[in-house]
Image (cartoon, rainbow, N blue to C red; front, side, top):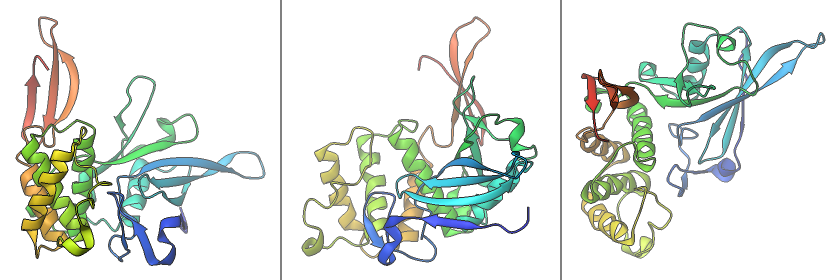
Amino acid sequence: IGKVELEEVNPHLLGGRVENHLGKTTPSSPDRDSNLDLPVLSSRAQHDKRGCASTVHETLELALSESIVSLGLQRKCKGQELLEKVCDHLNLLEKDYFGLTYEDRHDPRVWLEMDKRIAKFIKNEPWKFNFEVKFYPPDPAQLQEDITRYQLCLQIRNDILMGKLPCSFVTHALLGSYLVQSEIGDYDPDEHGRTYLKDFRFAPNQTPELEEKVMDLHRTHKGQTPAEAELHYLENAKKLAMYGVDLHPAKDSEGVDIMLGVCASGLLVYRDR
């Protein structure tokens, strides 16, 4: 592939500040400078003098932070090469938990095969991918890197907001309180007041009552570091019935619609959903 050039365009990084994944603005840090959300990847081709597209510049968009990274790739590259570049940019060492998905004519969410050329599956331009957690660890505490747990938190938060991971009111509030502690630290009544959560998102159908409960629980987390709060978040999220379950529509032997759930423990069958 040769030299890889990374090109970032992010208005939120000006002045040493960065917009975080919950919509709040905090000082940027070396570990969390740009990895603020699970990114969407798109591409544009550069043409050589013969008019043949020889290099594809993958554009990594961190959706909520509006940051863009341009990755130069040879058109013949394989999925693993693109995944490696994305993980390197996000400072992820535990790469085996993540993957790339794309949309085709038959399925809105297909996992990119790592050992085959991308051009075999993506015929049209621009190329577009989602960077996601593919394998949810049964015990997140066993992850070696804080940044891996951070990305897992982002994926779970997105799963909850999209309705893929159902929660009770109490669980929404508890998980939300840990996210807030991770993002802004200890509650300060002089600084935060009663409206500091108005831009945070915890649930698909968020209510003022839920925000009040999150505020109450946030006060109890005083002294927790971001890494500690994220670990508590994951320790509670892993107990949810649908944690790490990837659902696929199917039919049973009698032709009745069912959902097959694929997870770390095996296959699960869901009926009457």
